[in-house]
Image (tube, rainbow, N blue to C red; front, side):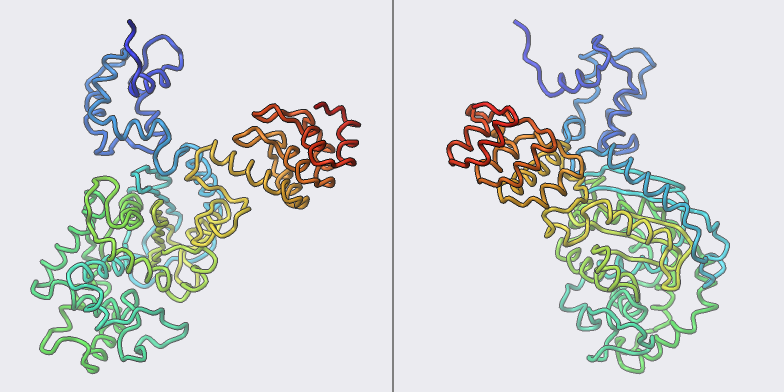
Length: 509
């Protein structure tokens, strides 16, 4: 008696496209890559190691079973479309298309704030994406380090929240966006820095993080958090940037002394230590690849997708994302929240970190910035991303949106469109039926009971919709799962004009 097939057998069969009972080792890696699982993913470490020991000979079912079994949970989810982006290969194509379009945007200027920003190649442009399931893609020089600059502020805020809690942290810092045009020395109505992401708030957070440690040990602690958030990618440090920052830091020093004059720092503390620590954080160097995993960890309520380790508490992440949504894009924050609708953080180095909660993190780096100190290509990419995909925080409210939902399988997308078309036909909403037809939808597609749009339009007596559907050459004799036809529905409803129209077009009971 033949042994019944299990998941591993079905996966092997799917990879055996030549149907000769064997596959190549490259077939396995390429299939995983198409689903967003890259070869360096620690979650398939054992499988990759086993494959690397093989030559280029064919792999047969029993050997395949041994190779994938240690990591079968992830491999099964990937191969069967059960990760957050089921059709990752198609999603990759869309992102590549947006990248290729936005790379043509040559506007903006490089920041001249410090020398280390001036010397960067202005044509650098990389994008990395990591989903909450650890599906990843990289475009451009994704492993080239750049200064993270103010992207350190949401991370430092999270660290302070983890140690002290929301109530204690916000005794010292507000949590509202700073109004456009505010002088940097202006505090909020309670006499506090406006939020943890602006200059004053960043200084205040510097005083709250691990006050028992000296600056060096405190900075090492922060670097370790970055490493954990990114799944093991340790950030580098640009000491020259620290020295350059000190030479142009009149605002930071003025702000620090002003805040001390207003008794905002603990008595007897050395504000130079806070400034030194903040400058070190501003001089962290990272890559879009690492930053996309950090963003995905935030999207995943503090659990790193690459390691499965809970780095931050969900409550911490919730508070951080709330402030990124309202204040993360400097003076452009309100417009970004309105038009893009996602938590994000930008910096003058041309990087934007975007978080799509429960879906993915995105990191974009292109050094040319606009008048609001935001990456021109990065902003262009965000706008095109939101035009294509339903990632805006409130897109779910628009039931008939033409945007793509990459969280759905192709069949789910198809059925969602079918149901929208059938509902419109049932309501007699001719304009909506016409709109959906113009998108190229199959007007003969049925629902789970094989009831087609013409079935529903006829059943509800909507002559104008029936006329439109017939004008588009739909099948007038489809049968639902009970064997019912549109003409039978018309007779049941005693719709004489529809009966006559159907019979004129060769409809049968």
